[in-house]
Length: 357
Image (cartoon, rainbow, N blue to C red; front, side, top):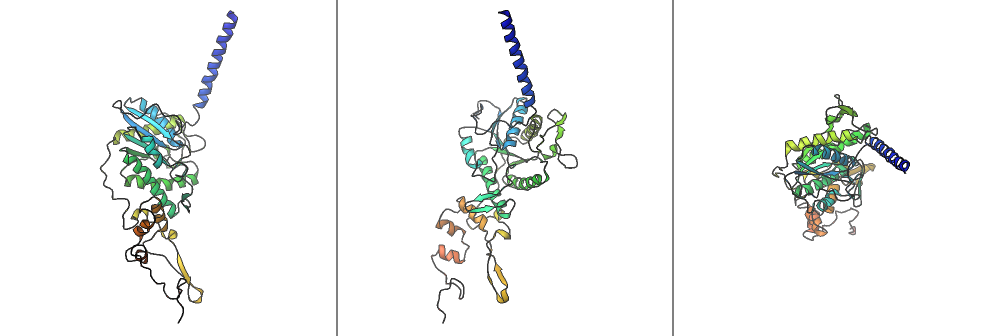
């Protein structure tokens, strides 16, 4: 009997030791945090104490940041962190996961003081807008990306949260890093235009000459390996360092929002300047001139991609109301859609059906 008890005790000890070893191995892998599709976090966002309540949202990198921010904030005892992320989410593909539509549901019945956003690592891809398709970094893509970024910022601002938008960290692959730089520039522009706080964490994960490194001081100041071999994700100590940087920004900036001094995003007279894209995305019309020369022209003050996106979002209403809203004053479109007057086609044009004399 005593021998049986001894064997049982040894079995427990061996199992405990193997579990501890497994945890040690796991601790060396990139950690991301809690997924937005998982069960509700313990923190409900209800203001039951005087802690500063922080909501972290975004992609897989945001999950890691949220986990690190949670650990760092626990030492302060004056912050409460809730992490909601979707690993494959981003800004470029709202049809897969739309943060601007999900946020009202996430925030319903909750009370947060600040939001931390880290998005963009998955955004090096095409943007779809109804039947339109925009390749990465084309003028139409930039227009659509700005509009979708604004929707996320507006959803957070409308809920009364002060927004801390975190920069995409440096990436090891040069081509991937170049794409992230494009996205980074757009995000920074829109975040600052909306009066939110842009938190640039990149210098902490670069060499002194601005090149990528996976080494650096962690949250304790000890130089360690912070990034995984894939050149994208972070180890636990790297996530802690990110969390430390973001918490420092929140401490400096507080949770009081600045007064909104921005101009209305959409004017009834047309597309706002921020959404105008360059020449290649404008419709090109033309005809063959003398000696086979191509004579082409583009309509002035018109941007098909921007107008299509804004109409899709309901900025101008729907149906005839949308056409009336975007018709330029004095144009044939205004005569047709507003006044109901048709304009005769110029003689000789393809739609001129008058009989020759």
